Structures are given as C-alpha cells and as structure tokens.
Image 1 (cartoon, one colour):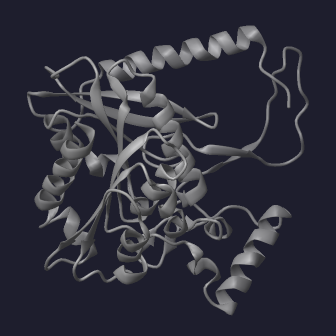
Image 2: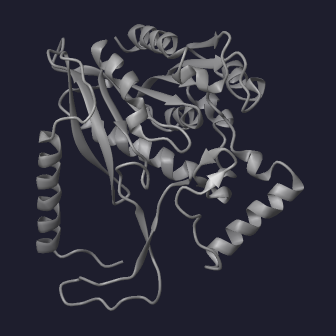
Length: 322
C-alpha cells in the first residue's frame, strides 16, 4: 500500500481541522435546552469520517465527566437519539452520539471499481470508486463504536475511567460485543437488544444462501447491497455473511468488570426475549440487572415508554459511573 506524501497528509489534515471548526460553530438545527450545549465533531473510523454530536451541560459539575457513547439501531441515525442524549447530558454526562459509516451524515466507505489506477508523482491517483452506503454490517458498526471510544477518550472532558455505552435494538447487542473487547467500558445499557446474528446460518436454506453470498462477493461476482434496500420492514440490507461471526450472546461472559443493564419489552414481537436479553442476563456474571417494561412492544421504548427507559438508564449510570 502506498502512503500519502507528507505535504499531502498535512494539507488533508488541515482541511479536516478547518471543516471540523466550521461544523462546531454551526448552531444545531433542532431544539436544545438552555442548559445543554451541542457541537458537531468528526471521528475517523478506519480512514472514513463519521459524523458525531457531543452533548454536555453548559456548566458541568467538574472538568472530567462520566461519559456515554450512544449508537443507533438497524437503519437508524444518530438524529433519532437526540432526545435521549439531551436527557443524559442534563443528568451530568458527557455524551457522544454518531452515525455509522455510510449512514446519516457520515461519509461512506469507498471501494475501488475498474482497473487499478496509475499512481502519479507524489503518490496521488485518480480512481473510479463506489460507495458502500446504508448497508448493515455488524462488524463494521461495532468497529465504529470502538473507534468512537478511542476518540472520546482523547477529549479533555472525558473521564476515561468512567465510560459507558448505550445501545438499542440492533445496537443493544453491539454494546455487549464492544464491552467484551474494550476494558474501558465500565457500564452499558442494552434496551430491546438482539444478541445473536447467527440466524444467517440458522437453517440449511439460509446457510446456503449466506455462504453463497460471501463466496460471490469475495470473488467479485456481486457487489454490496444498494443503499437503503429494504430487508423485510427494515431499511438497510445486511452484508449477510458478516453475521456469521457476530454473536454477542457468546461474548457476555467476557464482560465481567462491566455493569450490565438489559431492558426488554414485555410484548416483544421481533424476536424471542428468552433467546436474547433474558439469556444474556442469565449467562452474565458480575453486576447485572434485567428490567421488563410492561405493556409495550419493541418500538414502545422509543414512544410511550421512552421516559421510563431514560430514567432506568440514568439510574444505572448514576450507580456505576458516578
């Protein structure tokens, strides 16, 4: 792999810094309470810029704050997390929410198409590329969360000894996967979380399809799914072979030093809680809690039960991050 020249690298980083500064100075285009500030940031994840928003009290209690990294679910964006992020910031937390690569305001991962381009003097090249956008890849998404932790740990307001994760639905499993791999995570909240991607090989027919997709993609016979392609009622088609190695339910035993809160919908309709959060809670060791929100289905946690879910999360973070 060829590297950027020093001058090109410096120019590139200067442009990023300038664009970040402009982004931070823009006023939010959504309602923000008087006691909370919001700024836009750029996180570099595997070479791609992902868009993030930071929420914090205008008059924080201390220089270093307990921190929450939030991640969205299947087909969502960070914009939908703003009501929760604001409430967490008002409770005294330094909060970061972001869009995965290829989603929302984040840049897309680029893949080369056509012939290998000629590298010009100075290490530059002109290439024909395709963007990978609005597809669902759990390995890429959890990598983005890990990189978001790396980024926030470098912020002067982040207390690196008190980092928590928040995930919902698909990312309710992501927080388990990440906490099992990053010891900096001291607590997580997983609400209505799915914990096992091995449905992709769950039956002989699905297994044959998944393995066939992986073989065809690696041989260049097929590309990635189209942006925003539907998968049942969900937006964003899966890069299905990536789900074979994604099983947070098998990772939960590695989260021994992390306080684990699982919230489930009593009338969950998308999957069986017994095979997901309930089983994860049973397998978990150390500090753990299972909360059932009565009378709701999966999406009720974003609607009629949102206040209750926020209060449960804040109480958990207050107990284990403050």
